[in-house]
Every structure is written in structure tokens, then in C-alpha cells.
Length: 178
Image 1: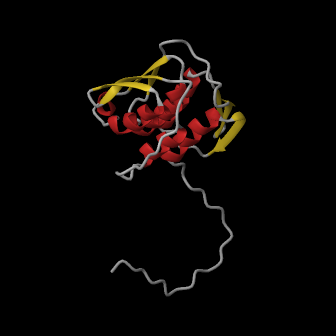
Image 2: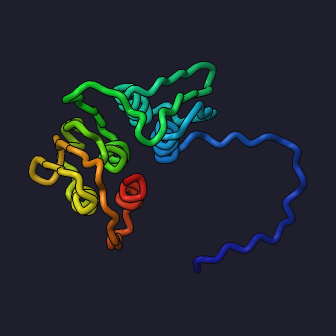
Image 3: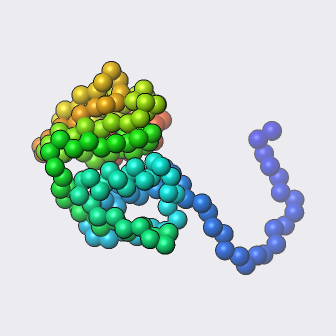
């Protein structure tokens, strides 16, 4: 019942196919590009509110962003290159992907960083991300089990052994960033 059988041969075609941008991949690209050394370029990012929140977040961390003509350039600062003021606030807005993944990037931050979100995001679970990240040595203080939260990194992180039980790509990605 789960099979599809194609009986017709598909004819050759010579056309370009444009696939719309993907929110999850766009956010991940923004975060990875901010950590890279040098300029990263992307076309066809999905410029949703969540991706724009990711771009604003890395700008607060001292990363230059240029967007023009559907091309986004991020001037990555390297693994330890974020430059920002003390007590900054990262607003993930409604993006669970951004809020959870950026935690993994910030676990070696020398200063406290507050992560906030809108009313809906603030009710969602961040404890499942905070627990493995705390094992690295970061100090994470949650409000109940969610946002707002503060994260104070540690320059002397230690490796962890981690097995993700829920199948959460956000949880796995956050740990990979860490």
C-alpha cells in the first residue's frame, strides 16, 4: 500500500528547476557561515522571519552581513571570533531552531548572554538542549523549562558522550555546534 509504480517513461527535458529556500537549512547556513573564516555566499535563502532573526542575531555577535539581489554574504569571524558587548540579548523571536542551535554556539562565550523569544517560543522546551550543553561545562539558567534563559560559557569545555533519544535534529545540531 506504500508503493507507487510508474509505468510511463519520463521524457527528457532541458529546463532549470528552482527549488524554494528551506527555513531550517537557511538558519543552519547562517550560523555555520558566521563561524567560518572569510566570506560565505548563498543564493535562494528563505528570507522568512526566522531566518531574518538568525541574521540579526549574528550581527549582534559582531558578524557582518550583506544581502542584495537574492545573494547573502556573511563575513565569518571564525570559531572564537564573535565580538560583542557584555549582557547582550539575542531575540530568537518565534524560531525554535535559532534559539536552540545558537545555544550550542554560545557555550564557550566568556560573557552571559540572554536568549529571549516571543510568547509562543517562551512556552516551548529548551531543557532538552540545556541538559547536554551543561555537561560540556556551560552554565545555563532556564525560566521554568524555557525562555528567557541565560547562558554563560566556559573556555575550558570538556567532551561529552551523548545519545539523543527523541530524534530531535535541533538537539543533535546544538550538540554538534557545541
